[in-house]
Image (cartoon, rainbow, N blue to C red; front, side):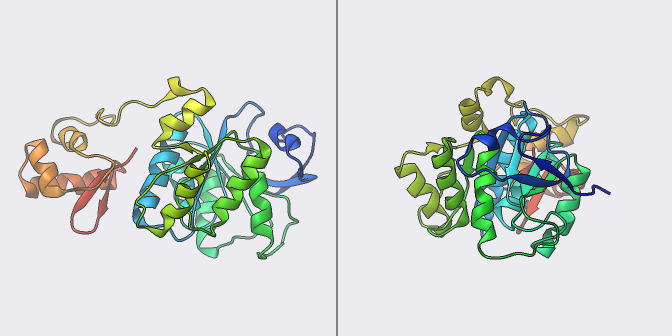
Length: 289
């Protein structure tokens, strides 16, 4: 299922933007659907060791881009990359993982299931390396030129001072691809990279709207977050309307929805099972896309 195939530069299915970079790959090994020449693609990248705040930002940003019809490209790594891929799949969108291994190698092994879901969701796994190629230190910085080269913009969510995400941003600058950075808490290590990029002239990505504006797609923004979910009414709709992207304690959600805390908690747990919200430690809930 989803056997690898080779697409050489210039052949049908080749991402046209990749032919414009200074050091394009000669060919790509592809599993899944790479998408048409007119597909809009944005790279969402960041640290492997991201804090919960950064992971939430990545999910929100990638999910909203997917709902606007944008394909999200990332590197298939742990942390921000995985969060972005997962959010796109949950939003019903397409995502492409550019790997630093062969397309038949799951690295990290913990993302094997994620890679399977990317393929099942209509996305693709891509690499310039031969099948069976295992992870090596040099391969990942080099594959980043493909992540940026096949994208119309690169968004750095969280990155330390030596993060590979900054390598992707540098490739993007060389390729003339717009770089955006998500501002964060300056006290956190993961804010160092985005802050440095912003000082160097990167655009602010406070949300998907900023990215879509760069692409000229502002009109494709999804419905406002406060709109009730499809098929929900009564108490469930009230609870969903009381949730935001930032976690809220069940007592506050209950108060805003006009319900008793116990009844609100039971209904929120049901909404979580249906995929409408997520629970955090201490009975805090936040809304999903």
